[in-house]
Structures are given as C-alpha cells and as structure tokens.
Amino acid sequence: LNAQEKNEVTQTIIEATDGRVPGVLGIGGNDTQSIIDSIQSANLEGIEAILSVSPYYNKPTQEGIYQHYKALAKVSPNPIIVYNVPGRTSSNVTAATTLRLANDFEKIAAVKEASGDLTQIMEIVNNRPEGFLVLSGDDNLTFPMLALGCDGVISVSGQAFPRIFSGMVRDALNGFIEKARPAHYELFHFTNLLFAEGNPGGIKASLKVLGVCDDHLRLPLWPISEELYSQIENEVKRIQ
Image 1 (tube, rainbow, N blue to C red):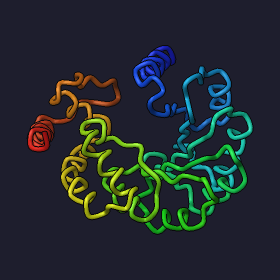
Image 2: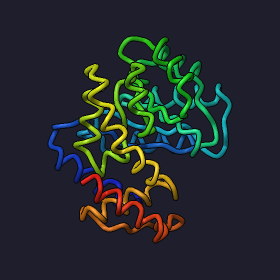
Image 3: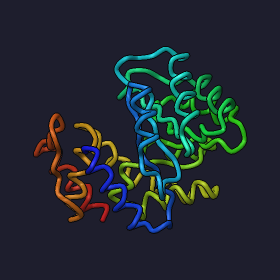
C-alpha cells in the first residue's frame, strides 16, 4: 500500500470497528529515523498501539535492535509491540533483548513472537515484567503458546475463520485446553496451506473462495498456483 492507501484502510477499519476492538497500526522498517518520522507524522486517532517489526535485511546486532526500539519508545505517543519474525527479517530478537526492552521502557508493551522457538518464548513469559504481553505471531503455534502462558495472537488464518480461531483462543486463555484443542486441529492443515507459497497469497485465495474479496496482489507478490488454490478451496469448503 502507498501512504494514502494505508491511511484510507486504517480509517475504514477504525470506523467499521467503532471502538469495539483495539486498533494496532504497523509502522516498521530498517531505517530508524524514517520510522521515527512516520510515527510522528501518523494520524494515531483510534489507534491503541504500534506494531513495529524488527529491522530487516541489514541484520543489526542485539545492541542495535535494543537502541532501535529505545529510539522509537522515546518518541511514540502509543505503546509499541515489538514484532520478532526472523523468517522475514533474517535476524532474531533474543529473549534477553526482549526482556531488556520490556524492563527498561514502559512504552514497550508487548512482543509479537514469530520466532517459532518455544524455548525462547518460555524464557520471555517466565521472566517478563508485570503487564508485558506476549502475543503469538504463528497461527499453528498459538494453541501451545497460550498453554505456556502467552496472552493472545495477531493472526492470519483467523481472517478466514474468525469464529473458530477466536473461540479457540478464548477457550485456551480461560484454561479450557481440552475444549480448545479440536479447533486448533480443525485449522491446522488449512493454516499450513496458507503459507505454502507465502503470505498473503494463501489467505487472499481463501477470502476469494469465501466471497469476501478478490485475490489481487502487487509485484513482487504473485498469486498462488492453481494446484495450491484447489487445495485451499477444498479445505475452506470442508471447514465451512
């Protein structure tokens, strides 16, 4: 999305949700000053928090990652959610760095953990300061992460089947693990298919099958293959 489109999408979501759920706006990149400028110029009315991905491509050290988020915390009027997704950034935010940020800056309010490393995630959960949230960034690890004490999820597959996915999350958060497990496995294969040829191609195809929207993508992204589309279509129809 260009800047104008991103603003239009954000305002549409704020109007549609009408305060019923907290709004989180993604403002991230690998140039700290540019992100600071974006935060300072953004319209944050109706936004509860900023999701900011750890710098990608240039692979900063752990100290560089810490100083990056420190700089954002100093200027942001909203709480910041650290987004750790090594599969996309090529660098991991270690448990030690996440905990250091959580303890040093009140504005660093949460982490979206998509490292896939449950040992790292448990280290954060076990040693985090009070009020610091640990959110899943991996749909198929959300159920075990909630069982380990995490607090929620920022989901992809939940966009296609929000009732099933959010029900699983609610049940797990309330301690009803046995009740939550079937929903986890109901979506397990579907979620794997979503990422078989990269996100967001899979979820857009799913939403097309559901009649929600079309599956247009912009270069360098490309629609998924016919074979995968057929598999996703079958899974969507099975789950419906």
